[in-house]
Length: 293
Image 1 (cartoon, rainbow, N blue to C red):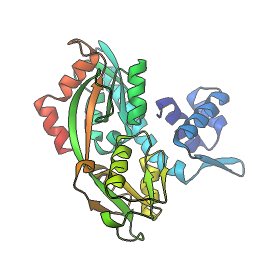
Image 2: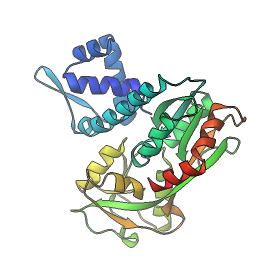
Image 3: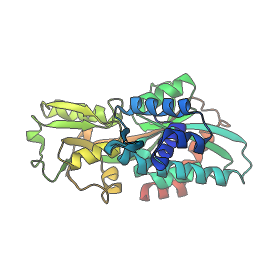
């Protein structure tokens, strides 16, 4: 689960080439910046920086993350600018899966800059961890893969997406009868799509050499494009990243081929911030725009 403060620290170091300058830019002590980066690297399971001479430079994983971090921070800044001119009556802490920030970015932007006097604070994480955050009270609502939340929580379905298998141009052609012997890549072992992958492998009686957790879709797609393995991902994600990563895809059918997203919340009372937001998202005009993104 990535926090905005961690992404701010990460971007500042990339921009200024040192922890010292990043601390000055963010008006933080150096130890705070270093802690944020260590926490972020631990969450993602990759090194984001390496030292070259006296400068700190981003690793390949860090370079991949930088673009998405910049987009998320820019989107957050724009939302705050809009909300400063709006009378905010309620605040909602909304957790969203990384897929949603990439494939459904227009909808996320509308949620953040909503016209219904809601201040929306965003946290990004995997479906399982976000549901745990909701139950622990650190999130008020979450947008996650369907079918993972316990039955006592309220929920509203948002949309369905098709899952496809992707592989690089240099990788042998893929079909359901020949999935054994290959390495598979997943964004997170705590994601809903990983559950679908396990079902696919079981039904096709496939035995992968191993399943590697990448920690971010940026790293996953770069590794797949480089021929490092196969991955099961939502088709809209492939469409959104087609300009950045050249991958092949195989369409699927079956129960494992549908990725559903739902809005999950603990407080379903009519005047709660979560109920207010989900009702607005599901208005006919929002639903139309959501499905046409």
